[in-house]
Length: 378
Ligand code: PLP
Image (tube, rainbow, N blue to C red; front, side, top):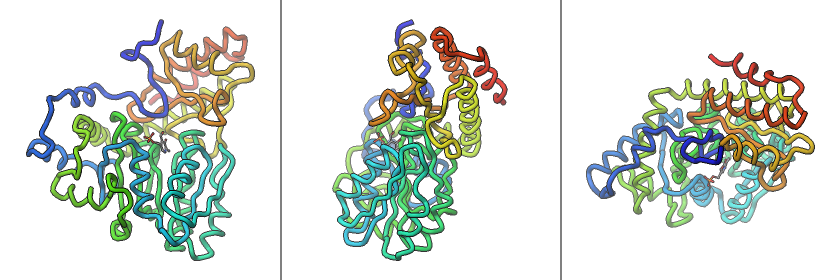
């Protein structure tokens, strides 16, 4: 079979497969973005956003990918003068570090090797010094398939009185994010991940304290301007109208399923994926205790790289999984299982992996990975 985007089994770590209802929602004639009809759409989106974030607060939709949301938050909330602490253990943490350094001259960066958890004790030691005003961290490090333990970090951030700014792009609607309990001040989500809407929108939740601390950063992504317009169900500049229509439908689907149910389903799929990887005799890339529920990162077995695995999945079986980024290119592959990913996706993917490994003489227990998935189905 040759690659066919219409029928592919699509399991990258975002953008994810999109429900036909959401696709259809975009097929509308042009709308007047300053007219009553579109204002009604924006009002509905505002009312639905707490379903996504699991809490109410100051919440905005920005036209732009997830990075636009991050830039909006860091540009307007990292202190110009006070110290900012950045914690990183992957590609997106490193990118956060780059963005933050554009807006703050006093940044301390603590790094852990990719695949290991963030350095908690050194972070606590920095926070105990009392002069850290903001902490920036990626919750779910998509590049290495690892979920950082924010519950363990949160008390130290709160004690230090620092703003807690979280990249939740591949976490929100995929793994539990306890905004209130952890005292998160800014949380950024991307439309193309757990929400399963098209790529191109960033969703930002702000606490009362963050709202009060906003300073003008970038013009286009000025969060205060966006919040002010949203009060009138409006946007400051021309929004990506079709994406807003898709967003409303994706939020409705999430509401119908329920946030808790989606998190539980994603967790179950992740456990099945991990068990199937074990059954294939392959190895997870990240520290297993912190393996992400939205994306499973797997080490390429020795001698089988992207051309022998991912490319065959794509060309022969029409299955799309993702490769590694940066230093991990050619060393790992990643299976995304968030949003509306489901059991048939895992079954067909592990069946094809079994076939590929079997043909290469590298499969010890034929059928075991499929059994591992089936045994975990509801
Ligand atoms: N942060 C994380 C954790 C991500 O997974 C991604 C995208 O995969 C980004 C940031 C960047 O988001 P975008 O590509 O939507 O700008």
